[in-house]
Length: 334
Image: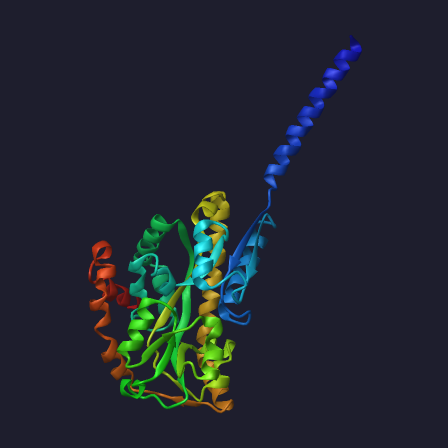
């Protein structure tokens, strides 16, 4: 009888130990999130991603880690966005132009001369108006914006001087494969040609495109300056870009961890703007040292050429947010 009691007691003790071990294991469950983007490792967006990953790991005591895959390792921008929607990726960096292909009201952010500078983009991204737009995206596609920021101020590179829209007649301008860039390229006087980001250098080198338009940071990181003679400071679009996260994955985290993730990506997004703004100041001199000619074109002529676009494309957003959405966004910096 004593032997039976002892065995029973031992079984209870082992079961209790097993429950305690399981409970302990549950408390220290580790989560590894996968983040992908298309930018070079030297680019501000990779540095922002790495900072956010570092902060999340530090503030969760290693319970949550984020592996960053730069430079299109997981696919093109459309591909990594789709993977994030489907849940095969957890987080992606996607520009407003790409997000606008699946949720059209976001195209308003891509209209020419909407934002004054990178800081204006960051301020807008943290506004209630931006939150309303981002919530619509979440409801329709199950992805949550966790870190809106700027991609930078787009400038036009070429092998000939560009001072007015008339100078772009017959000019093959590479743009992303998105509706708004194609439209503003045409409005600016060029012939748009869509080429994948990773293939732009070769296209310029081989003459498949006469020029391209990207922020100075991207022109530097992708070395486009090696195959172009002029940088024309058209400043025609200041892009919104964002870290987006699969919402089901976000919701699976505790409220405390959700707050940590949001704060970490807010800090990463601010670092991006700091880097981009500094590079806008520093890179002009660098490009001149490389032998490029910096052109200050007639900005007002380009503003006038593209001024009708917000009204022309307001059908994308007016039903949900009103026809005046574009002007309200412009006022967030005032």
